[in-house]
Image (cartoon, rainbow, N blue to C red):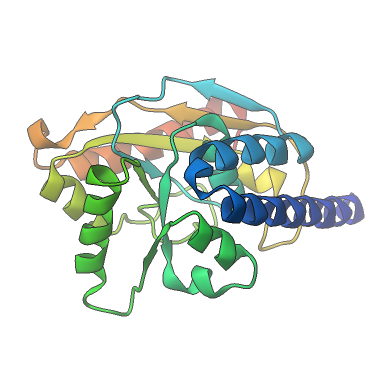
Length: 235
């Protein structure tokens, strides 16, 4: 079983590498069609990975900021496949330096943030403002900042809260379950299975209570626990 999971992982890695290469090429040839290129080819990638997706709740067409729990690259693939929105993801600067994958992030004009630079939050604010007002692209952030190893959400970083309150954004929390079964990058395994994506109700931060961010964290954690207890679906 473990050998099969390892073989499946390397197949998945090959699929991701090939499709990423295609996207890099197409983004270079047709930069004005970023959104449609990313949406279509991430759908293709999800299909080739053999992962079905169950959706609960509704994506908010007016959402400006998506906050998502994080387990791996499949989280990004899944949301890009579901939403034809030309999302602008916030990623740590180091990922832009990764061979090949960094070219995709740069070509798609994603947002890089340097966690070691005190001016990182100022740059993030400028990039978010440009995304919404100039590029008209919603922003997607993993508020945990890194990947959790179990069912418990890590504490949310304050950056997402700050920019949401600074610009009075409409925020939609999203819970993605099952991504580590599809591709577990740490253990280099893939056991297959389907994903579940839960779009929770949006929050109008401009009119939200002061503890909206803490409530959001609690709601996402309760959703994760409820799905695990009811359907044995892990994050």
